[in-house]
Image 1 (cartoon, helix red, strand yellow):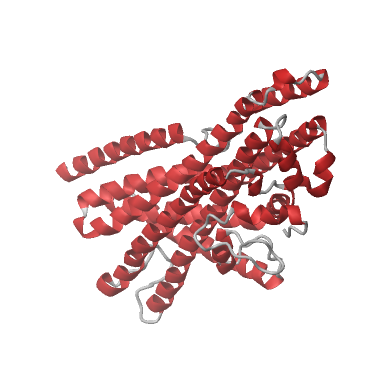
Image 2: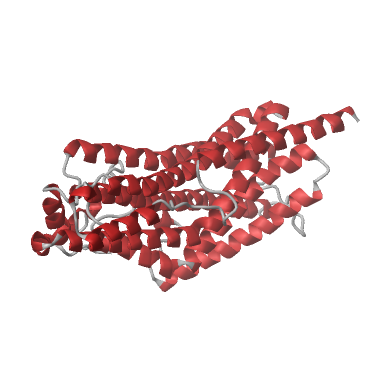
Length: 413
């Protein structure tokens, strides 16, 4: 993931919009904002250390064991709706983390290939010659990446209450669980509490790291579509010579319009391939995310109503999941919009002044392909866009109404 050519050194610009997280290092151009978090949970795909890989799988197995005993509690106490819903909120979050860990560990090779293409073959941001336009792009990208920061803050505040109060006030475990032994004995309780405490924070950092990584990848692809729009809009103008020089170095100075269009076709195909790979890797996580967000928010709203003692804890919890759901849909919406806008950019390139028939045919082919927008989905069921965000909120409210009616009915009986 090293950009050795001078013309490619500006690939760091794609992520320089991150608030002092991306930095230059001698051997690498930049570090993804997720790198620090993924390294902390031993899941950074570029790290092939055997010890870290073994540690990651050990943590995964521990998390799976914790999830089994935690889910057993929900099954046993299903008759108590309030208690089951409260425990179920963390069951779904833990399952969400399990899926994310498995994806990062099992898809290392494909993810590394994506990163390699991004650093080596994506066009630099300085292709956009106007400084104001570059600043506008950086601002859009900053919004995309700051949203996970909001989720991180909300989830940390919520987790401080979730992990601390059971020990301080109630002599309970962090995750309500059913064990085949008496866990409330001295030393056994403390050992289980520490184990669950570590697992709970592991879940938090794993989920956040995964989301930072996903949002950063999609944001980079959005920026690349915007760069292609700039290049194709001016492909027949004098600005195109400067674009070619920036992208291809001295070799681009003598490049013809037809050759440049051919390079754009190849870059478009490459970018679509990267987006398809991202879709294949992350679509299961997106589906789980939609389900978890609906369940978690429903549970949080219900608990806030029936147990005022947990109001602030559940408020932060609900805020975190709403923000998390929103930025998945936000970056998906941005990617779809910018990929489809490429067709309009091509049409604006003064093609009517170019009489080369093969050039025009190539433009038509590229326009037709661009009109089929790139979209990220949750295993093909729903797209990641604002429409899906609204539908999930409606479904959450429906579930909340159903559970609230059941709870009121049980109280009356």
